[in-house]
Image 1 (spheres, rainbow, N blue to C red):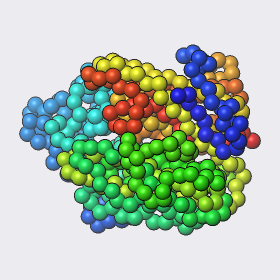
Image 2: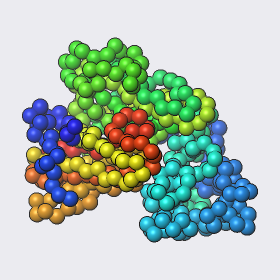
Image 3: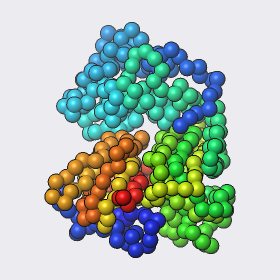
Length: 436
């Protein structure tokens, strides 16, 4: 399946942007909850709620001969983590640190906790226990992204509530409206992906200046699709459809509008830029959860769309998916694809989507003079980098946006494109507008 760019200008523009294969060039706010009180130090909370309970215990990261030479006992944990090279030879050779301040994607601690590991990186942690929920992982990511300080509040403590805490409603926007995907169950140690159509509450055309998404923990992704203006054929409003069971011809008729992979995600367009949203739009809310634990979990999603009635530049959706994926057993494979721009455009944001075998995603612009510029990079399949460009990234007519994803198949099976967490995907998405 060739990649494609979804643009709301004209069908002709959409068609002109499609291209790949032989033409490819070479080479948020969370409502306060009193279950966890914010401590003086984020790291102290990390120490008491995670390390002391799951890591700094006998036979693991404690005592005279701690695993991996890493003691996570309270007196030494911070200095043993931050800025320190791991004992794992492969990780150290790659230039990783146990915790690299400001760079979660280069921090071996987070890679080990996520199970985002190369062939010589050892096992996921905590060893022998259930994987950490996405809220706890996001808490650690925020702490590292803030510089991994040993004092001060650097991450939202409510993220540690996990599946047992109180999930509260996202407050509706002052200007715009809210969509809600009600709670649904995910069986123990299983995936569940559902789709639910909803009517837009807006009867008139609007412009979306930004969005907020809030999800219960363990979400793999949320996608908000729209059906074309005036569509009369779409699934019954409010009916829950299961991926692989109830999906039908409607699957191919929708348009990607926005997506989120973090438990709390937000994006705002630059001033004067917004996505067009026709009145009476029919939305399709798509939620995919992965429950790594031995008990039933719940999924739930709130979406705020911030709107206005006037705009200077109409944003378009960039969405390109390479489905020609073939990953042989026990091999590292690179999947590549590209699209050529038919116009001068300004890119405002880029992000990627892979599944658990994805190790790295890179995107380049191949300039008219043949030089390539690295414009996006993420080594985190679970919570990929969302890169925004304060100064829009200009791509000229005739230049190529090229991307490549690296996968490590550590199973006995061939892995191909698919929707479950055991399959793989190779997607780049973002927003752009025609250059002024």
